[in-house]
Image (cartoon, rainbow, N blue to C red; front, side, top):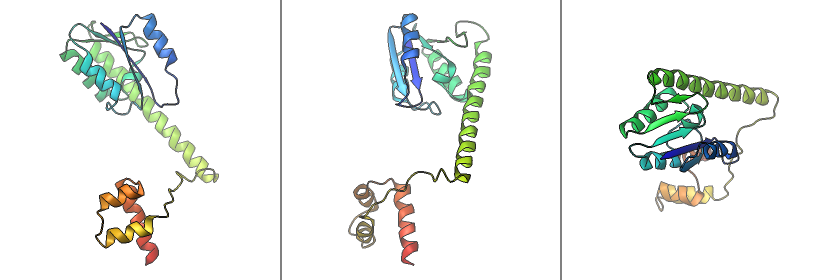
Length: 187
């Protein structure tokens, strides 16, 4: 079977172009992720990796859609190879049925990783300029008028920290940061 894998970085992005390519290539099954490629912990990627079997071919539009760093790319291709599944990237004309492919994958994987670094650099540069111009203050602070009451319950050991976080709808790092801020205000 031909298995297509499609990825865009966010839920607001469109997968149509990649899906059309997969249809043109006659794929039998398509897995679509709308998530960052910085990690391989993507639901549809993991489902696809579980689904493929000996003799299948995984097809992607480009390597950057499959993995954003060399290590992840080589590990994913190795996982496919162990299952005797081929890998094809249309943009880079990579096909694991040809010799010297690991060398090519390493080069293209490194290029995808470099591209990701450039994106992060440009993003940081843009944020820095926006901060200097007073246009960016970071994420808006979550206001929670229940903090004081729940904080006192937690400090009195009437509730656990986990329960306090649930009641405030906060993750641990936010909760403890807000506790520190609150305690600093109280002096």
